[in-house]
Amino acid sequence: MRILVLNYEYPPLGGGAGVATAALAQGLVDRGVKVDVVTSSARDRAERRTTDRGDELIEQGGLRLYRVRSCRIGVHQAGLLGAASYLVSALPVVRRLLRLHRYDAVHIFFSLPTGALLPFINLGGVPVIVSLRGSDVPGYDPCNIPVQCFHRILAPLTRWIWRRADRVIAVCESLGRLTGETAPGLVYSVVPNGVDLKLFHPAEQSDRPEQAPVRCLAVARLVERKGLGELIRGFALLERGRYQLEIVGKGPDERILLDLAARLGVADEVHFAGSLDRAGVARRYREADLFTLPSSAEAFGNVFAEALASGLPIVGSNVGGIPELVEHGVNGLLVTPGSPQTLAQAIRYLAEDPELREEMRIRNRAKAEAKLQWAQVTRRYLAIYKGVTRQLPVPALLTRQTVGA
Image 1 (cartoon, rainbow, N blue to C red):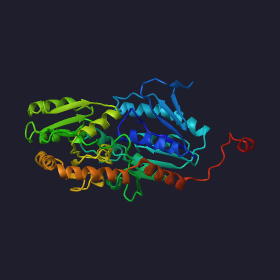
Image 2: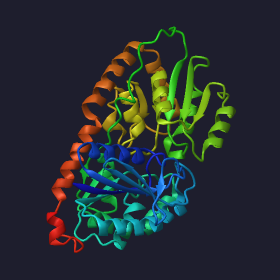
Image 3: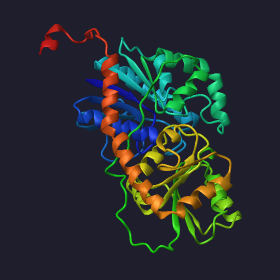
Image 4: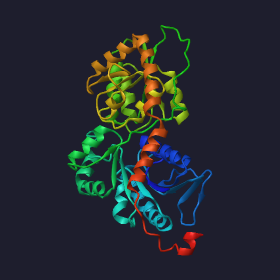
């Protein structure tokens, strides 16, 4: 089997969808599938060689990673120009690969922008799978007014992409339901992400004194929909000296959040760690006592899966795909976004009950091992690929002699 994967984000670029793409690609390769990925250039030329056509190619066993030029705003933010430039650069590469290889399926991550390649490529009967990730579904992030305006303008294209696909996959049930507002009656399947259970795991029992501050952790892009401003406001309502908050991530709202922490008098208790590599993030989970993130919009939420795998009790919001991972009162507490007081109460409740936190630690790791292994996710995608595979004609470039060779 050979699969062509298209995603404008791939580590180190992007967030959860890029991590998921890389994990799925490696999982497929481990099962003998040949995988070609066309993504954006990370501008790091170490251990790369450039093809004679200008795109960058990395070969890792059965995985061939094509990185094309794009003008991104940053590592975690593409911007309109970054998305558009990826489409322009990727189009000739995708066309060439489709001419050279006989793919069993084309797997597109993000209906927009990546799916906008569909009208311009000749698939020759190759089936298409479109994976919805969150920001590509209209109405997902009402905080981002420019994106919602683009969604309204491009709604006809979005509907066409979804209906052109042989299978539409949502990363969580709530995201799938949201598609009904744009394309009523759209048939979709739900396949959640997995999590790296070797990298993200609980800490060994520590000898921290009982009176040590309770360490709260948030891992997120610093944007409005992540609810970090609300988290800092809630944190400011807690007893001074009893709690610490570390925020891992970068984003356009960093200055706003720093100023908010200073204005509320908690600048000494709130630490902004910036961007960390995956190993550094995993270490922060193991060092924390609670994971806290009151997002106003969230699809699967990779960070919640990482917190589960790390055995962290969770204080999150009851929106999007979070309740599909976190059961209120069982492995965390869920609050309605917009109430710092309720958020502070939830943090305090868990902080004051170490026995409950230990019970949640055990439950969360067990749930991650039972439900979130990448091997399970890979098997589900393999079944989808096999389910849509069609009998394709032999490409004209392959003569009868070469087929039998």
